Image (cartoon, rainbow over all chains, first blue to last red):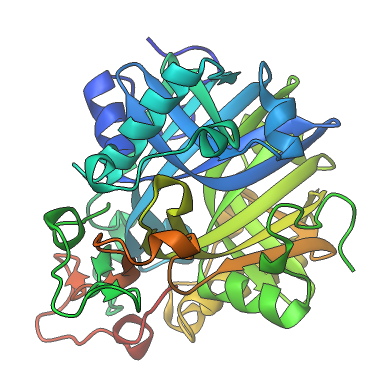
Length: 212
Length: 212
């Protein structure tokens, strides 16, 4: 059930509160924007997020002043996938097609080293299935240098708009082009780093990579 | 000059503070995430933004409880363009290529009807050059029903990462594929709304539409 804060009030038909819908959007898009209140003011930073069961996680440098302040603080994590631009015959009915999720809650730092390592393994494998096992193993220093923050998927809502523009009835006969410009992320040919052995093929977690 | 709040502290070489860099990112990506503090908690909402000179603007329904509370409140508007995924030979050096802008300031509502209409005209034409003049004209009721919020581009920073992964020297000879997966928004064939006259071609602001 939506909380008073997550219920979609404007255009309530766009609101969804079931975990399947929420999880599908979180799993499709690693980029999130996380909001905190620092010294009374809002700060919104882009970051990569990943989901593990009933939690989302994000990470950063342990040297980050901001991330240290955020442990135990209220946060809002928002993920947005832009699917298209919607052009109507009046300015007012222009819109965008999108899928978004907003999560509210208290951010907590993952401090136990073994748990933190497990969360980071999941992060790598969530984005690039199987990659963790082929990497040079993480060092203790790297683990110490990384902060992992998490939040339960509890107070959450999804908002989705799709489909054509909805013009006023009296406008649909006007000879103005209206419709949708579809958008999606396109994945280019992988660019090997210069030391990669010539002829070495990228693994399937690279060639199959998709987002959105 | 960056303020104490906008100076990029982590990886300062990624920070940029010149208006040309900031404006280019704002102009390339209409999607923004705006953060507010409501009842003490952060809220981050996706919205479309547009720039006009030294200000950014965003809009919403005048019936939105949230937008009414935001006039005069501190806000953080962040725009992020994801350009690629960066795969290194250790988990620690994985990254993403991106261009982002963070603006801090006080949001103000544009209340004068003529000014609000001018801002909305700019919004439509910023996204779709020339479209305003071919649309069914905006009604007084539609103008009243729309809230426009603005913020000066004053306390602002850009953050950019590009290029290959930077592995530890001792890792570059490992036989692990490393490199960049390039990402960009691809624009699909426009889908006309069902009442569009058969054979009617989309205008150039549709066929030339690009973001990112």
